[in-house]
Length: 559
Image 1 (spheres, one colour):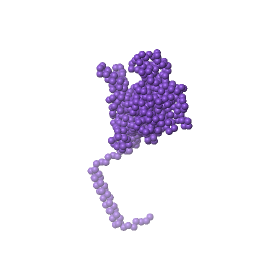
Image 2 (cartoon, one colour; image 1 turned 45 degrees about the horizontal axis):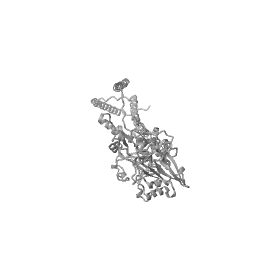
Image 3 (spheres, one colour; image 1 turned 120 degrees about the vertical axis):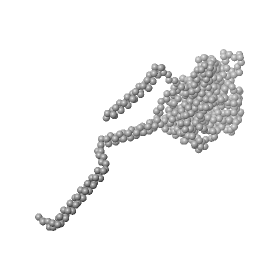
Image 4 (cartoon, one colour; image 1 turned 90 degrees about the vertical axis):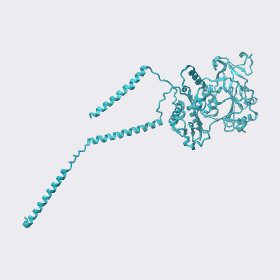
């Protein structure tokens, strides 16, 4: 072992230094202790609780998931309500429900359609129940076919939109139906105020049955019985929109021109019927044109009371000839108010037809109908013949109404001459007789010509190479298409007329939709039922909700 070579003095010095260091360390330690004694004691650090952390995190996650589910649910419900009909119509007449045939037609529309309501949706619906009904039906049409788009537009904020229309053609609350591919459009006019003021049944959303409205008002005025304006409001918007869709989706709409200038009868009802079924209706004054536009398909002479001069009769002849191509049509309606019209008569004679100077009366009470209260012989049902002109009307069960019918006479034996042939479309039932327009007081039915008489006949000639026919159809009376007969619920007059036009023009079958009433339906209940409902809503349900809340609170309290 190696010996320590240090001297005793050096060792002693090291021991002194070590002692001094120890003393200083003790002194410093004491000083630190004094400082720490003056400080507040530090809080005891809590231990990390994994269980609480897990529960807290889970609660946050569940809350976020719940909020996300609610948001997604609202979005999905919104998408579903936009794509599917989720509302229930509780009205008596189904004011907010599309007819089955409307839905069927809408689903088959294969072109993009834009329906523009010229107002904001909120402002439009705020105008009243009729406008809300219009908006709801439009949205249901869009749901039934995604190709149909509904837009809302404020005219004062979109001056460029109005620039595409003629002055006065559009206004607030009008509806514009457009088809970009055909470049066709139709404007539906808001006619509510006019209908309420005048009680007319014009082209608009709302119609008023004037007689019913007046009678109800007088009953209220004199007897104090119930009177509600909405009981006499009817909506035509469904028919109007379907008709507009038929028109705008047709790349080559059928044009029908009504003559004017010869003191014709009022053809408003017939024009509306044709327009409602997608025909392009217009008027023409033969005296003001050099020739009839060859793009026109039908010319209608609606019971003129002034004879047509020979120059304009020639224009009709040239129209039917169509440069030797045929394919044109003239329809002539007679009336008992007409005087002798020799030029028109010669025009009819060229097609082998004539209108008799008499009225078809009916002896058989089974074929008469009530007209202005008494049963009278000049108003009677008509017999539709089995021809392509009649279509499904022939096998139908509804009635064909007629009044003041003049006989349409075939002046050629067998109804055929040269390249012209004829078909009887409608006639009276048996036991009819003819009452001369100039009959005196000594006239008796027993002395009159009796039997069955024709009152609608179609004459036609067919092109030898193209097989295109031109036609002249003669009606014994304009009353066949009067407003009343076209609107009766048990009448087929409107369907018969449309079937004839559709067959002649080769157009698809139209749709006729009856107006819907806004009459309100009361919800009546007994006093006992009312008391039961009050107890259930005001006592049972609140108590159940409170009980459920208490149970949930207690269970959470004792966890």
